[in-house]
Length: 382
Picture 1 (cartoon, rainbow, N blue to C red):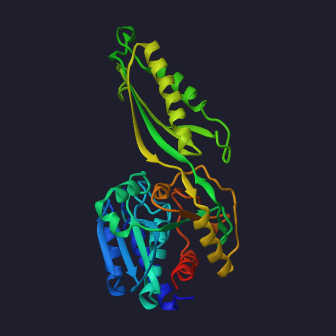
Picture 2 (picture 1 turned 90 degrees about the vertical axis):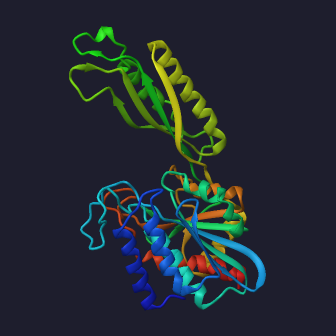
Picture 3 (picture 1 turned 180 degrees about the horizontal axis):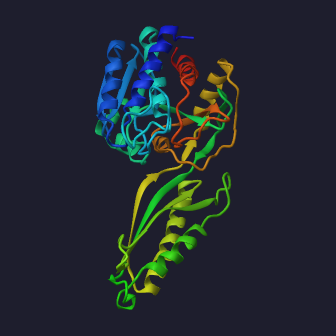
């Protein structure tokens, strides 16, 4: 193992510091500064900052040419109030590292420590701390940054801790592992009226009441079926918060989900037709916009083979688990650049679920994740 006991203690302290100071998507300035400060003594060949927002990339380059391997972690937290008695609980009201991105970031810092002491024999390693994963905008922004050409990889890897999976075990497979998804925001506009004379206005109440179950009825099947679709109403609002006003406006938020990108356009089309028909019949105006767009995440066989070899070398148990999963991950955008793969590291079968208010990343996973990634590096770059 390339990490000492002191490393483990210091890495845990780093993770707890990130956990106390969560920043949500697009606001990760201080988190990025903490990463850069921790990288300073490790003397990477190059550090890029401000990538796609607040992204940070540390490059460890050998003299001898060879392939570029990229390892990605996420910087952002969630807009959820943490409910925890931990000494390192969030100090930021309404914000918490309740997905484990603080732990993933710490795994990359562990790699940086190892690479600073035992440089690679050839090629280079890029450690990427990506912003704004939770809203799906971060990977796209990093790839669109002109400086990404400086770190363009030949292979890309990532991981995610996974509650519900046996502690320390791994789920890994080729092909789709995370679904495509996007948020559909529907606005309906009519005309308000006095609550005593609702007939003088145009209320969207009946239309919104019809749309919500009709949209969820678009759901079909389950992964790994390629025709899987899921529509989930996540938010709805009707009119003003007043007893004297019959509503004139409404808004519905729906998350649309498919196993692969190619199915998403069809699901969007069916949802849009449903909305247009319901609004037209009610005489309402309407608009539709899309947000939090995630491409499906697909593991390339050659990148999976590298991870399988590393897991075997480290004697870590792995299988396909319950993959593919319904959840989305914006790491999927990197497959347009190079072969890529993500594995899922068990946080324990009874561990609080991701995005739960009492979730906390298990610190003991840091060494395991770092060992796997380092094994990939040593096998590929010496």
